[in-house]
Image (cartoon, rainbow, N blue to C red; front, side, top):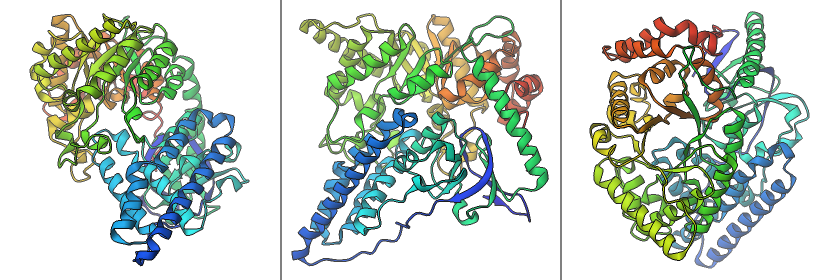
Length: 596
């Protein structure tokens, strides 16, 4: 979306990595792989098409091998991304699917690949977790890599950039990103991509400003255009006026001062002005993110998503695979707490490994999370045994996702006991007093919280799904996404009930949705009485900074008044009237926004 004047063409995207860059654009030209010719081949040509496809995959593998071998030290932490692309090249749905498509429909390799990849993308697009939906970009990158070799065009060379510029691209693959020379790049901006795309993850970890998902930036911007990239606000300004340039130079200085200030204090506890402590933890998906969690001052790992080890591979992970991963995490964190969420994924993702699992019309409401695990005891018990074994080496607790009825938590505990008994019989060391938690993310769990509390040691409120299910909102549907409101009074009353039940029954309660990482929500979450909040690591320093400027007692008074409000707008107005100045002085984006 763009507002056009003679100067200051403003384009709004997704702020994937904070910071401000001002400089000349470099338009990274890429081959258009959208238009593919469909061509039928004669029966005697089918094998040569298959061979052509296999050769293209081999060349793609050789390219990635070479890139991995040449990755600079500053990018080494991200080699796992390139490794996952290596696995995707041989993913059964892509590799075998393309070959089957050639055989069954007698089409050229390019068209068969497009059809096979389209099916895989469809599966990922239906997943509830935005992180996994964003994996579609990885599939697209692998598709493009194979296709370039089929077409004989070869990958573009981003490493040839020899001036200090802002890169403008339709999309950037991790392989391309790792070839960028940091001293030559001020910022990224792309038409595609999102907050959790791998390009965004790399940009954040390297602390390079990035705005993604701009739509048509490559059509609006030419090489050598002067542009401003504001990764904090998700804004790009093309051809800025002198006045705008002056304001953004000032904003850049303010941001760098703010970043240095909050980073220096990120290791301090999040303690209010009247001495109340709030634990601020990190949500992570990959073990490689632990360094970022610690560097940004995370007290614990509040949510470890365990799905990645099950994806992008032709077979299910073994107990030893899982144990090694969980043990590494536990040992890195030492005495700090690690909360491992058991598999939160649908059966449709395991179509290669489980013959009965098929596509679902409504995967968010179907066989997923604890429902899938309880119907897949072998998969579930393998993971439970691995967690129990790893807990022997650190401070691990276990959390079951999408609990909607008491019977599910009882059955899950029974399977956990069976896993423990089997380890005991085999003489394998494990922890027998591991804490057990339930994720509260559907309305029925809120209503039944008092009964669930009898079965667990802690609650963790997953607000991403709780908001979606409570308000019946599909937040990726652009027609209703505006109705996805974390400060909706119904959502706040639900959180309030869960916290009240937890306090009454003496169990811990945390909150691990995206809501925790927005500074404007901090007074509410603090006043509700949560024991801990957990979020993207990069959000931790700013959230801790806000907590230190608030009074716990005043936050509790705010919550009492908040529960009397009728709309999200009323709640927001109340927060701003009560704590606006404190939040503004503790954050960057609120007090330094520049009019465009």
